[in-house]
Image (tube, rainbow, N blue to C red; front, side, top):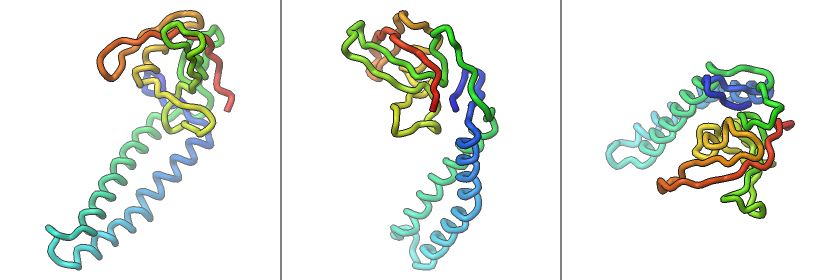
Length: 166
């Protein structure tokens, strides 16, 4: 379900099966399909000006990148439920509510988890993201700081941290 600092990726059985199925498709039928597209485009002639060939090669590159990502993710996968804290400490696998710059009205609630577990029900932040790494390990009521893309620091107050229940 989520990643921890030890590079273990916690996945539910359902998520593991879904990712494994995707990997099997990409390394089987999808590779065959893209190879056929490349071969067909190659037969059209001059490869320097062959848009279909270049598009197929780009698609192949994206597929192979995804294969590497899935392979690494599944190699480090632990199937089951992530261990969660019950003392209000922010950890992967938790739904966290924060207030920006101490403004209790400007809040954000998100799931701290790997993007593979993202759903449309709740916004998901990776534990490796600036915000995710900034709040991880802090307890409810504490302030946490993280670095913005422009290099400046931002501060948030942790209002709530509860185990994700699905």
